[in-house]
Length: 92
Image (cartoon, rainbow, N blue to C red; front, side, top):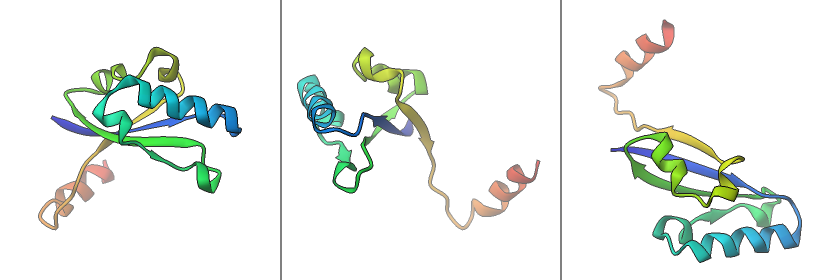
């Protein structure tokens, strides 16, 4: 499985923040109920990570109303052994 970071933005006002948090909590999804929020620093987004088979599967765990503005980012860890191959791929 692949790890994905899911970023879900919302508008920068109290009502939107409260609605976004409530929507996440109402899902009951372990992933979403453990999201990290940037609102205290005026970064009105939530982030959480999931392990899924595809980006499509990752986005599908979001409520439909949140999917349009969400961003799904594939995560990868590198080791020192990986770096030469990784650099070669970026040169192409």
